[in-house]
Image (cartoon, rainbow, N blue to C red):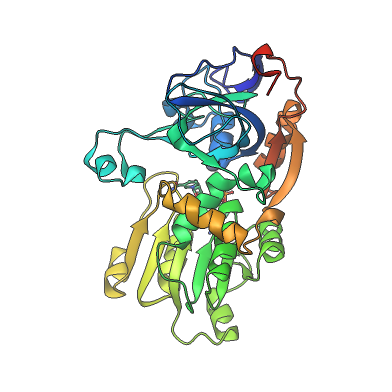
Amino acid sequence: MKALVKSHATIGLWQEDRPTPEIGPEDVLIKVHKTGICGTDIHIWNWDDWAARTVPVGLIIGHEFAGEIVEMGAQVQGLALGQRCSGEGHLIGKLSRQSRAGRFHLDPATRGIGVNENGAFAQYLRLPAFNVVPLPEGISDDIGAILDPLGNAVHTALSFDLVGEDVLITGAGPIGIMAAAVARHVGARHVVITDVNQTRLDLAARVADVTPVNVAHEDLRDVQIRLKMAEGFDVGMEMSGNPQALDQMVASLVMGGKIAMLGIPPGMAPVDWSKIVFKAITIKGVYGREIFETWYKMIAMLQNGLDVSKVITHRFKAADFAQGFEVMRSGQSGKVVLDWTCQPPDHQRFVSV
Ligand code: NAD
Ligand code: ZN
């Protein structure tokens, strides 16, 4: 099969021919239809310090995917050949207290496909059946391929009650934009999203009914006055990873406000803790998706009018992956989706499926 591999410890990715994965009794084999390029994949392409520390050379990368089941292990129940699916890319351990209590997303032994284990940027992916999430008919492969980052957005957005609240999102990357759409969908009053990249703010306004603010040119306090917000934002979602955005968020929140933090700062960053203490602010770190509650909620919302389709701005054939990565690296895109169905079906095992 064709696969995108981190073949060398330097910038870039390489298409290689790899054997189609063998599956174990509790696994399925998924024929990949579409994949999403994630910021994580850009770190791996760039081979920054984090990637060099974390990702083994020779790994098939990618973790955002949709496809169909073409082979099932002997122990697999409740799934069927031909089932369209996406799936949770975090492979959890089963031994920790958290995992045994059913809080799977908090298992410390979690390993990621496309980061620690072979991933989804390939014609076929081996995945534990436990991780499979079937796709209902109304959810396309394109949307299926971005459920992983939508899940980050949903997990963050549902961390605090947003009904009737004023919400500030810092960072209009794909995840910030989708979180804004979710906040609007679940009944927030004002949803303000900030960035310093005008292309992304324009995209945010096309995807959801939000107030985009370019903090390079506009003062958030003026925006609050314009929106007739007396005291400040009730809930913040930090989705830029920029420490200045967190400062701005703390300054813009009400007394007793809440922050859900998904953005990952590049390293140690100074924080004015006294402001957080005197404002009695609650901060929650958010990692991944709740397994599988986030998946149920997001699929239900997609079936009930949540529309994030416009966040996908570019589509490429998998063979043209380099163009897709170039667009993502430029910062002038939303989600970029790669199509694997154009690759020749080069494996005899599945011709009848
Ligand atoms: P992204 O890098 O595409 O978007 C971040 C955006 O923040 C960019 O558009 C950038 O211009 C903007 N930004 C930079 N400085 C800003 C400032 N001062 N104020 C406002 N915006 C500013 O990232 P993404 O893929 O949308 O992901 C969002 C964040 O979440 C990233 O930090 C990513 O690393 C992180 N992430 C965390 C998890 C997790 O499980 N915790 C999962 C996925 C992504
Ligand atoms: Zn991702």
